[in-house]
Amino acid sequence: MILVTGGAGYIGSHTVVELLQAGREVVVIDNLCNGSQEAVRRVERITGKVVPLVEGDIRDRHALDAVFAEHAIEAVIHFAGLKAVGESVAKPLAYYDNNVNGTLVLCEAMAAAGVHRLIFSSSATVYGSEAPVPYLESMPRGSTSNPYGTSKAMVEKVLEDLAAADERWSMALLRYFNPIGAHPSGLIGEDPQGIPNNLMPFIAQVAVGRRDELAIFGNDYPTADGTCERDYLHVVDLAVGHLKALKALEAPGVSVYNLGTGQGISVLEMVKSFTRVTGVEVPYRFGARRPGDLPAFWADAAKAERELGWSTERSLDDMMADTWRWQSANPKGYAG
Ligand code: NAD
Ligand code: UDP
Image (cartoon, rainbow, N blue to C red; front, side):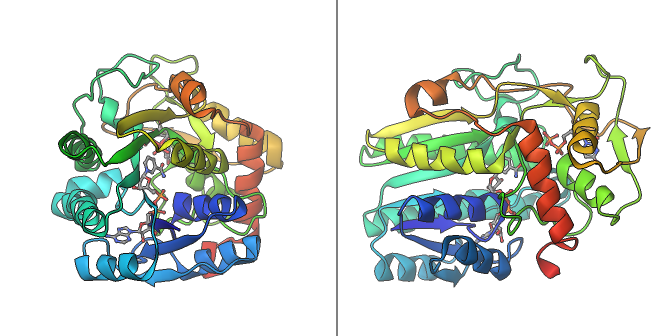
């Protein structure tokens, strides 16, 4: 049995589908601050399997102890956390509490239950602002520019120290690049609360008529078309990466993997691809740069391919088509 924290959220729900379809048993803990019960119900619809959902907080040691007492957990995939960069600047304590303290409580509960296998959702943001592209796992963590990024870098360090102190721990730190897209069923996808911070859900909400136009943050960057470049990968490929990492969790210690395609795509290329694939126009205007944005970054994804046998299989067109299938069938996300 695999414990998935944050399994009612975007990446967690897609990973639970892949786990169940691979024959794994899963229990989810989620406090539903940014996830929904409906997502878990839809995972059940896709897979035809029951997903136990514990509505609880990873900072609640008693809730975790009860989960470990009730289920024979072999490993934990840890998605639970807060992820909005701008909000993290305004509410640093909430971010350090959820992301750092939450992980400490989780690890304490795991150790007490004798469970020492952990997969952690880290981020390309830990490479910091000075790192040259493509990012390689062997590069040092850089200087992060907001509490969200710092919380991910802090957790990575905590987990490394923990594994160094006790060789029973086996951990994978997965540094995600930019996950987008949705399950091809159209039943689950990304459902941000309020105004989306990220590009893909913003494009999808403009396309479905929930927002008037996309503001492209800056067109004077030193890139081919002046807009920022990112490494977008399909969320189902990302989910599959967790299954591969889980299989590889044998040796003691910490392994770090970039999960990306290895290719940068500009904001303008994203908008054009969306329209080409879906036939839906996305009105946009160029606006000011967003503070803290880097011009371009993408992964060197060779290590995950070499050691995990993982590489992305779904194309940018798949990402666009699947996003649109989800968004057009669920204009208001899980709310209707
Ligand atoms: P999400 O917000 O959709 O999912 C996170 C889930 O965790 C939500 O369902 C939320 O309700 C739950 N949660 C938050 N705090 C909790 C707590 N204290 N106790 C229990 N549950 C809690 O986000 P996501 O996009 O699925 O991201 C999953 C993880 O991957 C996060 O840790 C995020 O920082 C990381 N990550 C995401 C991206 C991205 O672009 N989406 C990129 C890099 C890393
Ligand atoms: N972006 C944009 N308009 C938006 C949201 C994002 O132009 O409404 C740009 C943003 O400046 C960045 C890219 O799209 O260059 C990806 O942004 P996102 O927040 O999705 O990912 P991140 O910057 O965190 O990698």
